[in-house]
Image: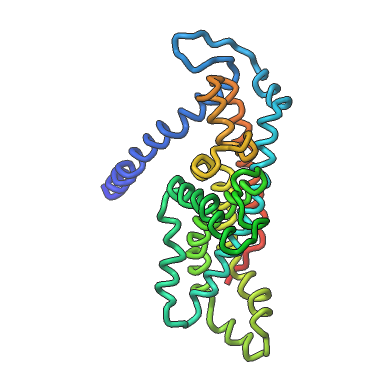
Length: 291
């Protein structure tokens, strides 16, 4: 009787979630793979022409797609380093005992509560009009110019906005990891004469490896999938110089009406992100230390 009751409770909680996950994720994903083998414009009344792996082969010679892939890799490397570096620094700062620590923690986390679209439009004003004002005031024209007019600086601008948004979030994860560290080990290291740098590199960072696993996974996945900041800050310009993976796929499907080809790009994108994130999790999990 009790077992039946447990089974009923489990079904009550899992079946609705399983239904939603299947409807929202599994079915669209399988549909996307199916459409990637066809040449189709996405209009139901128009015929679908089976092309096999033709859409996938076409991506090899698609210069715009390859360029956006390279920009995404550049963006992701810089973003992952910057977000995790500042997230860890912020976490170390807010674990100290200065008087305004709670207010500082709140302010550092607050950008994460603002949507990427809004953040992008705010920073667009800073990188254009704000920098123009600073240029006039300081005379540093080679530093304060319109970054969004140059592709490479546009990419840097997106990295800064992404780091601004995500660093506070990773700070919370690193903060939870630091607060869970056993005080006895840290106190023993002080008694043994270890300085702050030695405690950070030899004790805190190795013990924080579970937090690194989570933060690296989140920042990698979010950086690869970024679209909102790309849209609001640069819209892929100038001349597609800052167009990232997600925007390229969106433009292919909804801008050029190449539904099948766009789906093939999305499948390739999924495989790349899955391989990289799973490899990262596998590597960092092996380095985790049990306390």
